[in-house]
Length: 137
Figure 1: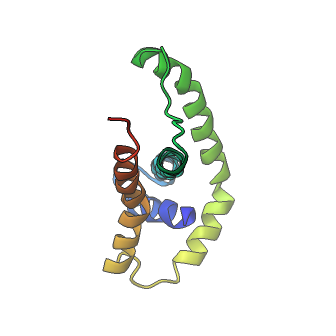
Figure 2: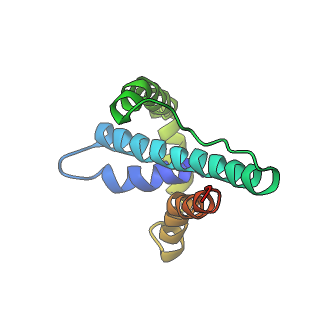
C-alpha cells in the first residue's frame, strides 16, 4: 500500500520541469509521511472510540502545553520520521517499485486514482467521525 502511494506521487512528479528524481523522491516521502500519519491517527481514534464507548476510559492527549510548545516538542520527531522514510525509499528501492508498477499500462486509471484517494482520505474521514463520537459532552 505504501509503495503504491509513493509510486503514485513519484511518477507524477519525476518528469516535471522544475523537479526530477530527487524532488520527486522528496515529495513522495512527504506524502507518504502524511499518509502514515493519517493511518496512525485512524488507529488512535479507533482505540479512543472503543475505550470511551465500551469501557468509559478517555485517552485523549490533553496537556498543559500550548500550540507552540507542542509544535516545538513534536518537530524533531517529525523530522526524524521523515528522514527515516526518505532513507527507506532509496534509489534501489525506487528502481524495484518502478519495475513492479511500470508493467501496468494504464496506471492512472479511475480505479487507481480512487484507490489512492481512499488510502489517504478515508482514514481521515473515519477518524473525524470516531473522535466526534468519543467526546464527553
